[in-house]
Image (tube, rainbow, N blue to C red; front, side, top):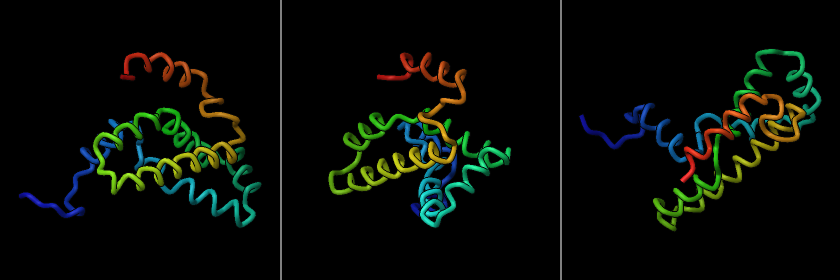
Length: 135
């Protein structure tokens, strides 16, 4: 049955679309805002201690870091420029800003200077596949 309601949107094409644009929005959206809010309330050291001492939290932050590392803002921006009407492109800009904020706070909590710093094999994997994926 055809429907244009958001409630009837299936997850598979939704995730595929965000993966194809290299933005992977469903994986990270909200994480940066949450970490920023916690840091603003003075919980930065607690978040950093949680990252060091709690495997579940560390794994969660590391998975977000992996998704951020696999993303490509220039390709996401290109999709916006080509497929999104000019009147709606501000949303894409705001989402890219949210992405950068998420990266900033993930790095702050993890203590890493850059993405994939603690995962050299993932870094090599991403670098080796880029020539095959990039236009």
